[in-house]
Length: 416
Ligand code: LLP
Image (tube, rainbow, N blue to C red; front, side):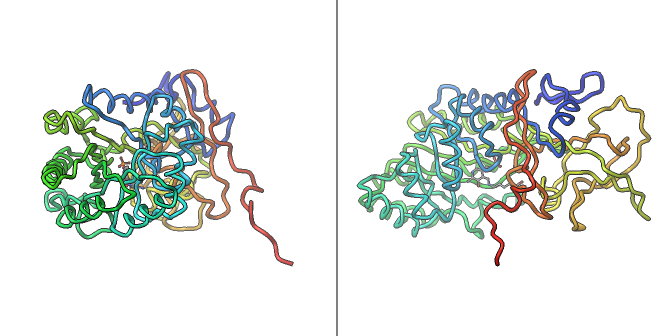
């Protein structure tokens, strides 16, 4: 559930009239709802109950400082994938002792920064990375806490949408090599083996593959215990899907409860979650204004002022995101439109074949844009990136200013 609702046929974000926000701050404009973010985070946290656990929000989904500061105040942990994300978490007031560091290509510099910040754990993805972390930790006279990302190879036939938990991808280490790699990790003087992790994919709409993966990891944890390697936390990654169109993913409660059927017998094992999309996607919208309506030979186009550089998911993944009129009280003729941006690419669309009642100057809202929206924005076609607003009840905070013209060439130099 989210807090974007119509009041007298006008779209509101919590108690803020989004038409007013657009008027004040211009478009394209990202608008996030604090109450929605908090509600989603608490859903994970509450469902885990008294079992030792930590919700590590996946920063990549939306790394705005305003968003991170809201989560930091809840006591959230964070899943990061770069030194840049670590810096954002620290700047936003996040607790480094609740940070896990994922990703296949951590540089020496990033590892050093994370060690200096005393993060909770490195989620290691390869043997070469183990050696590198040991070396960097040794040079600092430190012990690096590590977890190894296991590729559980969950059955792709029954769950073909799972992309990152299969053998044929760059993430994690194969289940078959796991014991040997854990033994190797335990042999390094500057590594402290504390955890095990996985991440089997994103936008999953069924709990079964998560539970299958968990079962495989629990069996591996038992096998390691027999070898004298004791795992203290199990990080199940992120990946819980959301409703963009007609998907019916489990609610975070149901997802966590499904995992708890296995974890209840393991009170010694701390459970870590890394949700990104499930917390942020439906906590944000992208507001855009219709510039022109254009009748093509076969299609009608609504040309809007947001484009693929603002919201890449439709162009990149053919992702479907709901597009709605902001003011439904306006009496407009309904037609079927392709909603497209001004960027010079055929692939620049936000939605195709959408029935909308609009005219030039009207506002549209792209729903479910809070995750993998602004973070994937670019300056393509020399378009300044959008502003971002975080709404809290009746108050609206500008959490990122719209880029200015001169920001476009910041750091660039002419040659003589
Ligand atoms: N943990 C790890 C190690 C991950 O790689 C990811 C996402 C997450 C957690 C968070 O997953 P989530 O709960 O958000 O599904 N840009 C794509 C999504 C890429 C996800 C990459 N990894 C999109 O717009 O759909």
